[in-house]
Length: 157
Image (tube, rainbow, N blue to C red):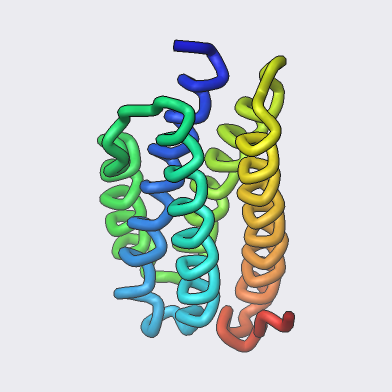
């Protein structure tokens, strides 16, 4: 197995964690008033994940993608931190941490020499989506840190 294939499979696992995370946060998001953010990115990530999984399968990946123990632990930590801090800022900070990790996995995959064009293109799209998500999260965090409801920051596209 090539090094780019292993990197791509790790990215697929992290992408699965991301999708599960959006679903998990969406269950609580009405309390924090940023359900639209979760819904928006969950739909886009689902489409990207399906496309990436299909391309990886065509290239010989046999990995059943269901996420990781690390992702499950992060969701539990997010719940605990949100309950203890009882605030949107704590949840947004954890979302930022998860998105930053996903971005690093995409970057690591993009850095591989000999990465096939179809893999490169879908990973580039995943990275662009993650970059936009990070920008939105940082804006919501700034907004919430000033005492405004995170949901009063709206995604406009």
